[in-house]
Image (tube, rainbow, N blue to C red; front, side):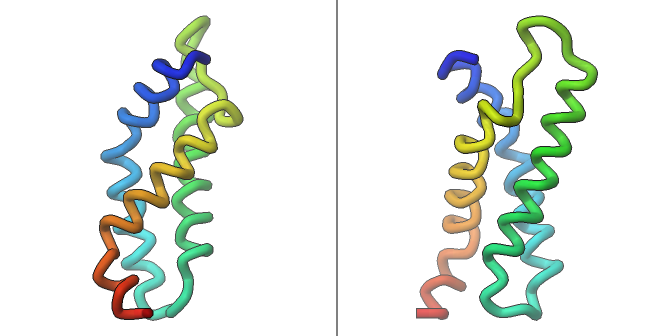
Amino acid sequence: MNLAAMLALVLQLLPTIVKLVNVAEQIFSDQPKSGEVKAAMVNNALQAIVEGGQAISTGGAKATWTEIAPAVQTAVKIVADVSFKDDLKAQK
């Protein structure tokens, strides 16, 4: 997969990433320092979504999770950092 295709796929996933980050925050809101667990939950959900898409995709449209995982994980971290920047400041 070329860089442009990977970026396009990550950008298509951004709304889903934002929703999943918010869901994770709600689920773990009463658990301090649960960032790693939240990130794992979001990344596992995204992996399931991408792999489900792979199952119904064909030919050149078929991306692999291995190829896009690092970019998706970076996007999850950025969304979480932006979404919860006030919470991060309060923890310091």
